[in-house]
Length: 68
Image (tube, rainbow, N blue to C red; front, side):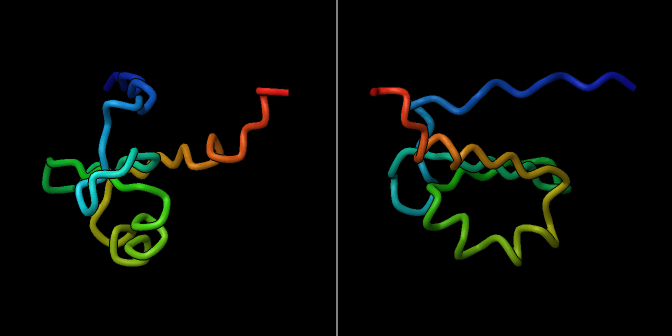
């Protein structure tokens, strides 16, 4: 089996709950995927862990201080 690396989330990826920029991608065991902002990912993470085959969390980019 070969695994393809998922592309990083971009500013075009939006939270399925509120429309804010998505920082978390959850690939569901049933085949779909959900995108969440950091806030909604934290709120739904316990249940997501039960139904997701993979969770990619890029919320650390929120605190990236490369502008200095």
